[in-house]
Every structure is written in C-alpha cells, then in structure tokens.
Image 1 (cartoon, rainbow, N blue to C red):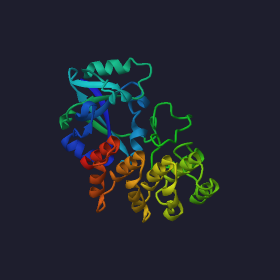
Image 2: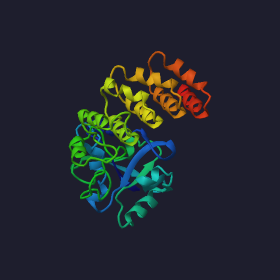
Image 3: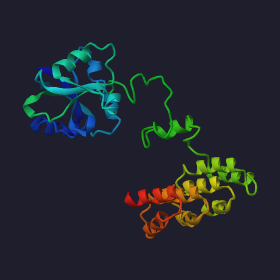
Image 4: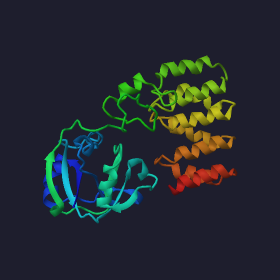
Length: 297
C-alpha cells in the first residue's frame, strides 16, 4: 500500500473522517479527483504544499490527511506546471511514490487521483505546522516578486504595498488622476497622439475618472487616441462613461468602432443589444466579427 498526504481545511476534518475525501478538484483535462503527495522521509517535502494552499484562506488552517492507496491504483503524477499542458504522466500509485522519491528536487510535484477517497482508506488525520513549504513558486523566497497583471494577487495580504513599492511599467499602479490630467493638458491641442495614448492607458487601469475632462478626446483627429479613449472609459463606473463610448459607435474609423463592440461585450445595460446589432451590420469585417462575438457571448 502506498501512503499519500492530502491537505484540507480543518473545518472539513470531521466530514473527511466520516465520509472520506470528495472528488471536487479539477485535474488534467477537466477530470474530477483528489490531489495528494507521497509521504517522503523529509517532513518538509511531504508537506511542501501547505503554505501555498494556506494563501487561499482555508478556515481554521489546514490539516494533513494520510491516505493509503493500493500499489496498482492508477494516478497522474507530474509537476504542477505540466497540468496546463496535459503533460502529467499516468502511472500506478507505487510508481508515483518511487518516481517522486528519486527526484533531486520534488518541490512542485503533485499526484492526482481521479476518484474520491473512501473513509476506509483514511489512515489518520493530524494537525500540521502552518509555516512549512513554499509560497507562489518553489525558490520564490529571495526573488523579487512580479507585479504585472497576470502575476499579482489582487486582495492578497500586502499586495497593495507590494505594488506601490514595485510599480510595474505597464500595469501600475497608475498615477493619480490629477497627474494624468496634467499630462493631457501638457500635450497641447489637439495633442501628441503617443503621449495621449500613454496617458489613457494609465486611465484604463482606474475604476473611475473625470469623464468631462477627457470627453474632448472623442474628437481627436488621430483614431488611435479615440480607440484608447474607448478602452479607458470602458473600465470606469463613472456616470456618463458608457454614454460617451456609445457615441463613438458611429466613428468613421473601423478600429474605433471595433473597440466599442468589444467594450459593449461587458455591458448588460438597456440598449446594449441594439448597439451590437447595429455594429453587426457594419461594412468592415473586423467590426462585424467583434459585434457578433459579443452578441453570442
């Protein structure tokens, strides 16, 4: 019998002891099952996933559930990065233990059992120190964290201070609105397109903004500025922002009309479907394709 450890919330421990572990995790290819890791001689490596899983706010911390599986039980094993590429390998439970035990660095590896675990297969449930293992990625300690939109964790502990201390050149945090408005004023009339596009990019990272102070850019001669205005206003919840975007649905340039169609994809206000239906009859194929995709979505 192969021994594995599964980490779960302390609040779920009575249910797990009574009824086993539900197959409520998504694995490779969308299959449902249970994630676990072999019990190794190293306590730290056995419980390496604890700090990473604890980041997601499990009630009362985590407990370690030891599970006995038959040696010939089919499982998937591999590094967590292989999951997105469907590259985790099928093998038996005994082979998974042998393969992971032989690795020089098994951090980040996982075993996926594509079924539920019965209560009779639970060996024991015990508490585990909540400071064991790695966070984010193995070897993340001592590495300057990335604050780009794809890597940062919104609402995470200390995330705002981290972004302010390490601002990303493209993903912010954005400068204050008064600074951005000063840049628009400094761009002149009608304004340098590159400078205005850069300023509107920072405005698109804000949730609200002064619609009346940027409304004049809807008449800017450069279509890339009007397109950037649509993308910036679409992120705002300020009253009047969507109305200004709607007026640009009749813009003479197809890139601007296409941006309006993609912006309306996120709307659920009255009149949105009529706007998209009009754009779906646009003479330009890119505008029609964007509007049709928004209508189907």
